[in-house]
Amino acid sequence: MFWREEIPPKIPYQRALILFDKGTETLILQSRYEIPKGDGNSTLGWVVPVPAVPEVASMPADMAQKLFGYLSGYSRPRVTIIDPPRFAAVAVAGLSLLTLLVCLLSFVLPLPQRFKENRGRLARYSMWGLLICFPIIIIRSFAAAHGSLGVDVIAEQRAGIYDVSVVRSDNTEGLIGWLNKNDFKFGDRDRAAFGSYISKGWCFVVAIINPSTGEEERRIVSEGLAAPLILRFPHTNAIYPVALTGTGGFKTEIVIYLASSTKMTANDRLTLRFAGEMRKGLSRALLSADIDPEGFFDPKKMNFPYLCKFKDRLTPNRMREDITFSEAEDDKPYREHIYRTISRGEGPLALQPPPSPRPTPWPRPTSPPHLTPRPTPSSPRPTPAPRP
Image (cartoon, rainbow, N blue to C red; front, side):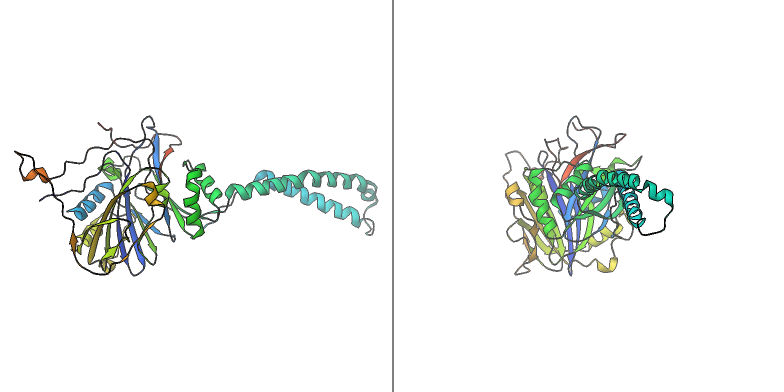
């Protein structure tokens, strides 16, 4: 019997494939791509917390549709802000200090008589320069410290339809300020989640959907879902970050396929829907996919013999902490068993789920693990096809 995972039309939705092997996780993450009504010139961006600096890639949305359909049936530059007013103040203050020093030395050194006759005036000018410039230096330094706020841009790259920056910060206010300067919309309710990730030393992948001119829509969005973001990073256990998603205040349906060497459990955070041996079709699908950058997946490291599927609709309260997976106590296969009643006059086709309807907008998009509208600086970016 044909079966396709149904995408709910009116709530936030995420789906992911996690490949986990020997302390390395590859997270293929996809979320609903929607722009609120009346905001047609906006594009979207993701902020995804990860425990270490990741390798980043992407694939076209239509390839992801086929992949999930199959599953269903890093240089470290430092940001330096050049501050002209502070630079000028430092220069004037330095010159003033040097002039004062020369005025003092003129009492013991054989300097020209003309200089000695004017040293009183020079000393007064120097004092005025110091009195004016030191407050400017202090104020500008304080502003700079609280403007950049310790946000390091570790890496920047282009991956598929995304402009990606990987950032790290040691200050919650600074990180939120930096994100909001880059047109995101974070506030007080997000502070606790950001603070928790910062305290653990996590990085943040900031990915802006910015399709190239002439990019085919099928590569941008398919089934109402944006092209997936692919992140590879080291971690002791497979993990799925949801704490930042939970701050959005919406129930979110999450479907996670976890491929590994053994059966896994979500530790009562998500319901197990399937567990069993994995066919080689997954490896073939990933190796044949149009991944950017090319060669992201190594054929020699694509041995994932066991597949688990987890699915649930989580409330914000259930997303306060990230979902961590661990090895199950047994390798016993499992397949969810669904009972449905066929109405009179209907045949077996009634058991098939209806085709996924085109999604409709909701008040505030909240996606992995934060998908927020980002205004376009100049011209409109490609947007999803009109919805019925």
